[in-house]
Image (cartoon, rainbow, N blue to C red):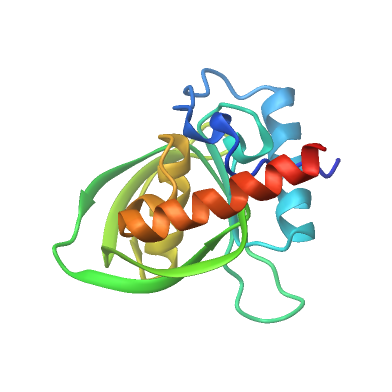
Length: 171
C-alpha cells in the first residue's frame, strides 16, 4: 500500500471523465488499497480515483461516525439510477480543493448501482451524508467538482486563488 499524491485544482485532469473498470484485477485492488490509505492520511471521507490521477470509475468511502471505527466501502462503476425531488444542503469540502468549504444543494436521496471488489453488483438507497458523498464522488468521475454548483462569482474566486497558488508553487 502507498499514499498517493492527491491532485488539486487547477489540474485539468480533474475535469476528465473517468473510464469504466472493465475487470477487477490485482491492480484495481491495489489502487483501492492505496486510495484508502491516501484518503485516511488526508484525512477525508471519500476519494475518487481521478483525484489520484487514475481515470477509472472507482470510489473509496468511509463514513464511520466514531473515532477509531472504520466502515470502508468501494464503489466500482457507480451510477445514480434515481434522485429524490427533495433537496438537502450540506457543507462540502474536497481533498482536491483543500481547506475550502461551501454549502451545496443536492438531491436528498439517490438510488445507486455499483460493483464491489468481488465483482458483485449492488443497488442501494443513499440518504443524508451518504447521498451527498456518493453524488460528490460520482461527480468527480464525470469531471464535475462541487464548486460547479456554486455561483460563477464564488467559483471564479476559488479558481483564481488556487491557480495563483499553483503558479507560486511551480516557481
